[in-house]
Every structure is written in structure tokens, then in C-alpha cells.
Image (cartoon, rainbow over the protein chains, first blue to last red):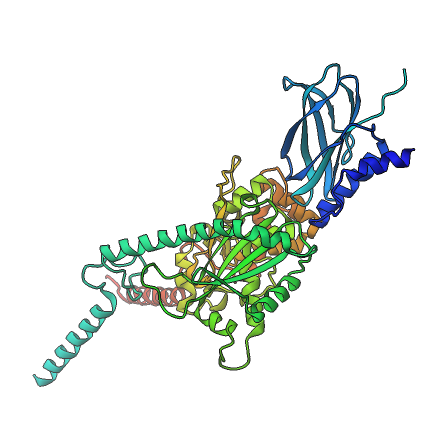
Length: 145
Length: 395
């Protein structure tokens, strides 16, 4: 069953990973991480990727459904040493921040209400600029209560 | 009487010849160069104005060309096969033409010789071949000035270089027979140097804000070549090539900024000032970030003798990891550079400069021969006076 879920999650990913080596690296890495955390069937995985120089930040917004547990994961390429991931409330204030996991920060969050939340990535350490990163907002299966 | 008249005539002819050589033409102002150098014909104010306008036009045209290339190259870069970080296109009179095979081959050899393979920042090179017939409706392209567009002004992973080939290289690239064998090695060397800042972007990525601001503010003069080659006193500068006893050695020294002269004199504080000029705590980086570089070294007035290879030599000395830490550092340039060198910047640079130029002595100093003659005369005078005084007796 888990394998089927992984395949379902992966099916939304472009089949041919084109681009530079580092871009392919983060795409493969985020794909593996999504597979490792597992996804909830029926809900899409939101993904963003790009590149940042040291100390630069990128933000995007996504809608999180109420009472759905999410794993927000960020990965970066081999030259990146530290990546900071922050979840922002609809009003723009910090809800959670992960900066201790170096190049693989993960946040777990369950929204009280459906709303548009912000996600910010800060490239805190990149030894060969620019460093590629990818973020995935993965809806998890709800625990049976 | 006839002899005197002849000498007067010779004198007058001599004066006329000197005036012809040294006085500026009518309506022109003399250049600010040394009085004893032949005066260059600066032209009338109208001519100077026309040249200034032509230079502005060339600058604007080069910038436009780069921005146009940014759009045109997108498709080409997308189509480029994975693993390729170098794209070469050619044009002549603003019309795209197939890249001559020798150019393609030479630039790929240059790329390999620089140790560049697949890089995070790709380089797109536009070779501008000279047009066969002169165009009179616009200023001619100045062949020695290359223009570069930084990755942050493109898609963040592509640096664009526009390299005017000039008449000689255009003839070579088009297969014309030149004297001797085809100078393929020279073409490789020229293109290698032509990559300029783009080679640094490819090798080390985008620099941190402080390093980038520092380099931008001084026109990347310390990072013009990523492959410095062997060090020695036969560098690419009149000072490196001449000997101190020749006049040609001193003339360029007098045209250098004071800090560069102090550095030649092995003064660490002068070297430090020459290297760190332009470094700022709050650097301003223009957008689009376009750099125009004069590639003819004899037309450049360096802030530091052999400065074009300074950062290449720093990288060579400290190794890639330490250089990358400096390159991407958020610290001020002097701190980051000293940390990479593990020495004060001035001291390291003074040692480095001694590798190219014999240190000179600064300040007032009498020549040894003059001192000996003066002392001899003084001693002679004292002896004569003493002798005279000893014989003169008052009774």
C-alpha cells in the first residue's frame, strides 16, 4: 500500500528531470523525501524549487486545509550547508521555524482553519553560489482518532 | 661670421623641430602626460565631444546587445545538452552567423584548460566578428573592449560575455592565411582571457555581496583572468617587461596611482590600500550588472601592477575551499581576504608584488655617484682651505 502511495505521489512530478546537475540533485532529493514521509491520497503535494545565493530568501504562499497534518520539507544541493525554513501565518507572523537540521529542515503542522499560509526559505550557507533548493508541502495521512 | 650664421640657422631649425614635436596642434590642448613626452594630438573641443559621444554610444550599444542576448540565448541554453556549461554564438554586423570551427574549438580548449567542466554558472559567449567594410552611420566597434552581463541580471545561472574579435582575429577565424602557422594557441589564450569575470563566475559561482560590490566598484580589475599561469618578472605590463635603468620603466610608474607606487616599493599599507580600494560596508550593485573591460593592457592604468591576476593567484595559493569561503563571505572584504590568506592583506600583497617587480626606493635620495663626487669636492675644498690657512701666518 505504501508503495502505491509513493507511486501516486511521484506521478505528479515531471517525468524527465532536465536542467543542471544541481537542479536534478534537489529534484531527486525532494522526491525521495516525499516518498519517505508518505502522502495522503487525494491531496496534492505543493512543490517549489529555485536557487538562492548565500543569505538570500525566497517565499511563496500555499493553502493549507484545516485539520490536515502537513509535513513541510526543504532540501538543497550538495554545496548548501544550512537552510532555514519558516512557516508564516496568513498575517505574516512566524508560526514555526526550523534552522537546526542544516540541509534538510522539516516542519510538521496541522492548520486549525483553511487559510493561505506563507513559507519562507533562507539560504544560510552555500559554499558555491547559487545553491538549488526545493520545498514540498506534503499532506500526511490523518491519524485515526 | 659665416660660421656664426650657420650655427644660428642650425639652432633655429632645432627649435622648430622641437616645437613641432612637443607643442600641441592648433586649437587643441596638450595632454597631461609628462612634459618631455611627445604630445598626443588630442583634437579640438568639437572632436573631443564627438569622441565622447561615440564612446557613450558604444557603451549603450554594448549594454543593449547584452540585454538582447539575454532574451535570445534563453532558447539556446534550454536546448543545450545537459552537462554543457559553455555556449558559443557568433555574429557579424548584428547578424547571427555560424560560429567558425576554430573559434568553437579554441574556446572549448580554453574552457578545459581553465579546469571548467559543468559549472553552476554557465557562460554564453558571443563572438563579434569585425565587418569587412566600414559602417559610416554609427561609431565603429572598439575591438579591445569586452562586455559582460552578470548572472544575477540574467537567469541567475548564466553569465554572458560579448567579445569583439577585431580585424586580425576575424581574419584568422575566417580562415585567412596569416604569417606563419595558424596561431591556435594564441587564439586559445585570447579567448581564455576574454572570458574575464564570467570565468570567475563559472569557477567560483556568484560572489557574496561584499566581494561582488568591491569588484564591481573597481571594474573587476583584480579578477580579469582566472588562470594566472606561472609567476615571474615578465608580466603583461610595461613595468614588468622593462628594466629600472631604462626610461620606459619609469614613465608608466609615474602614471600609476600613489598606492600602486607604494606597493611597488613594498610598503604593506600602500598594497593594502591598492587592493582594498572600492571595498565598502554597504556595497551598491547596479542592475543590470554590466561590466565593460578594456582588454588591451597597454591602455589600462592599473590600480595594482599585475593586478589582473591578483585573485587568481590568491585562489592558487589558498586553495579552492578557502577561496570559496572568502568569495561567498558576508564579512567585509579585508576581513574575509585576510582570513583566507591567513596573513594581513598588505603584507601578503607586498610579497606577491615582489614576484613581478623589483622593489623601488621611494623618497628623496641622492644618487651614489653624486654623493661620491660631492664628498670628493668637499674634502678637496677643505684640504685646500686648510692648507692655505696653515701657510698663512700673521706675525
